[in-house]
Image (cartoon, rainbow, N blue to C red):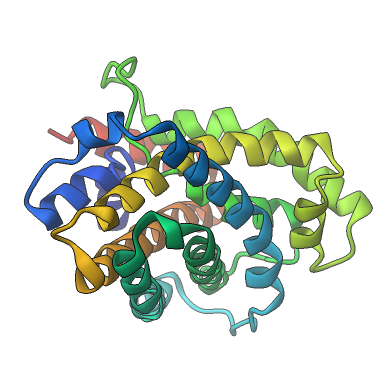
Length: 275
């Protein structure tokens, strides 16, 4: 299926930094490695705060859509992704104008909009967002933006390996929410930090998301970027995670209708054909 081929092409090479470098016309990897300790601390705190605050806002404010066919969902999710991308361009312009100092204010807003986009996309595929596990799957999308590690040998699927690594973390966090949190209270449970299971998941996701946030913040802080460039980078940031959500939840929807084993086989075939 063409969708699976496209999903594999995107998910197996999830490097936001490469896309940002292409936009700017220059590599930023070396500068990323030289970030001052104070800047790294600012990014770390902003990342954790953004993830803690965003989930409840995005999930609880979403209006459920009518069930749709998979083909229609592919079209509608692309439109949803574009709509939310436009919404974060302004906050990115603020980040580009004020630089790293604006990150603690700008990032939670941007992350909330992105998470609403993720939830909207999941909903279009028929994902039940009242299910705590699916709420955690929405948060999981933020772990998909960092590049593959040097330990990857190219023969295994980085995406499927990531899902396997996060499976128990997601399951444990969802079990806590199902038992202790009322419907729609996922965000408050995250902010409270009352569950070791949720904290473990959040910490693991934050470690991956922080890499991408660092790339975004550094790119916006470059003197040549400015407000307009910052808006463009934030649009790219939002579009990136929207596409990750389209691929991930599209695959979950196919697995539900055709079986996980069958879809994973097709995905691995598509992955093997990548250059």
